[in-house]
Amino acid sequence: MSEAEPEQAATTAAAAVAGTSAGAAAVTARAAAIELRRAGLSYGDRVLWENLDLSVAPGEFLAVLGPNGSGKTSLLRVLLGLQPLTTGTALIAGQRVRTGSRHIGYIPQQKAFRAGSPLRARDLVGLGLDGHRWGIRLRGRAFRQRVDELLEVVGASAYADVPVGMLSGGEQQRLRAAQALATDPQVLLCDEPLLSLDLHHQQAVSALIDGQRRRSGTAVVFVTHEINPIIDYVDRVLYLAGGQFRVGTPEEVMTTEVLSDMYGTRVRVIRNEGRLVVVGLPDATTHEHGQHEGDED
Ligand code: ADP
Image 1 (cartoon, helix red, strand yellow):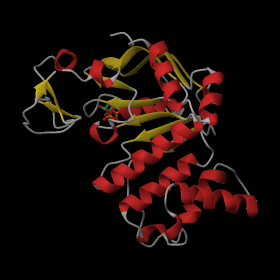
Image 2: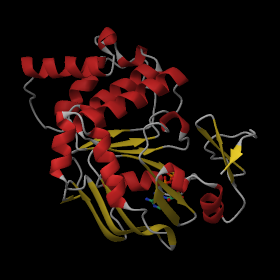
Image 3: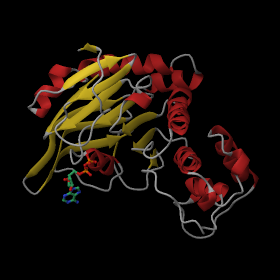
């Protein structure tokens, strides 16, 4: 149940961001973006996970997978400083986790904005820059420029002045991504950010997140029940199930043997044209349902 060679994974992630000056800076910084030491979380006598040692490097893309109720969202809540650990410690950029950290960007699950909301796309993104401040906001030229930049990065310039309630789910989710990236965070936490997006927007939002970690060395923790839309970006997987966890590359963790062991029942992992199909999961949460033929792992 131990973490599979974090040093090696960190080097891989560093290599992924190398070649850009931001990447090089991230590499020399060296400190882990996220560090969990002997971390455990229980509600009453229900243990979600325990003895979790995990170090996420700057620029690394970590996918968090597992069935409903395995504690994926709770892990994000721990990193956001909203949920205390039962045991162990959690550090972000070398500091104990706390709420309202500018080191952290957060993309929540897709939820539609109220149709009548007067908030425009650019207002929403602007809140990512100064929404944590109380009182009068100083919104000068630099502020407007930064908002424009962020809108452009996520491909939302065309609808910058449109009220958010009038935008499609995919467009809204791009704005949430822009908002989360506003402070150029060291850590980006994503809670099923692709849910209810069509394939095109899934690709756009995942590519955007990948671009951020390559450009700026942002460490990404991406909670998802479906690995395929992000499979090309993922450095390591943290798989949670039944009070256990596994950490490693997708090749190490997403195998028939490992998942069958975790679920305590026969689960098959099939690789099909670069996609992973997991068959026989004991609950409704799958990483792609279906009975495809292919090479079994
Ligand atoms: P996931 O994101 O993997 O679906 P969650 O982290 O949302 O899992 O929840 C894990 C389990 O912990 C669920 O069974 C949930 O009901 C329970 N849980 C979550 N938050 C609390 C809480 N504050 N108090 C008690 N139980 C909780």
